[in-house]
Image (cartoon, rainbow, N blue to C red; front, side):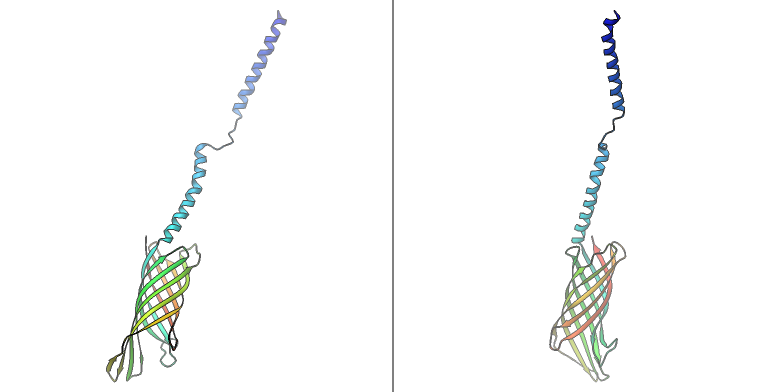
Length: 224
């Protein structure tokens, strides 16, 4: 009787061992993949960073700014030099700036400057209306300070008056064109306003050729 039951006992022991090993395997199971929530976060975060960079670049490319500046415009004159051998005049400009890309800046301006020179009995006064367009390359920078280097061109309408012994005489207006290198530095104060410093050396395309040096400082208002 015992011999007949031996196969049944052996089969039961084998089933018990198999069930025990399966239970241990389930407890020791470690998933190879992260949970769905973590996988979603891992896939979403890099895309978010890329989108933020794209949005920032797109914003920079479509940025307009308005501003105004005051300064001095001088012309070398060895006989009547006032500052560093320059005959200087006050210069004021209003301008609009357009960022065509993150590296290329266009700046159009409308300005006015006046100067005078001469002796006690003879005085020459000039009033100049200026229309300008400048293109700049903006150097890469991760800070709020930005440096630009480019080329400036100015179209000037000049009206002059000669005063001899207190009697003024108006001369016909004339047009002149100047071209030369320009540099600027922009210091971000807030997200809306920046301090702008400009310098330029332009050459009047005429005979004789004259050199003009300009230094200005102003404020830039960013339109978002």
